[in-house]
Length: 183
Image (cartoon, rainbow, N blue to C red):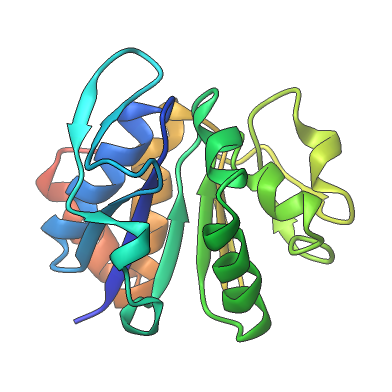
């Protein structure tokens, strides 16, 4: 079974993070909620507190198949401030392991040159942060080992792209049907 780590930092966008975890689990993809805040309980951008399941300090990245970075302000800034996570993001990129980021979080990848030569999307107004990428306005885009999403309203598309990455488009379509989602 594939194992995805979804990272939570204070100020994360609740819908982006929880929708992703929910849809991945529906697809029988292990989705581990990981705090970078030093505590398991993490408060989101809208004041909703989520009990995560692991702390980054205790995580064995060797068991993780994908890193997922939700957006939200200042959540994505707090993710980027986590040196251990950023080291792993760069290592995953170097090893061509998959990374997914939504909303403001694709800017994290852009500032590290990870999106250069890739097709990507980001929250409106943050396009300059994706230097070297071909920008699109799709809700979510999958290019090689990178998946990016635009914003909270694109959370289902983003999560389904991750399902498609691991299990194929038919599996993603089945999950979409079970949640009565259509484009």
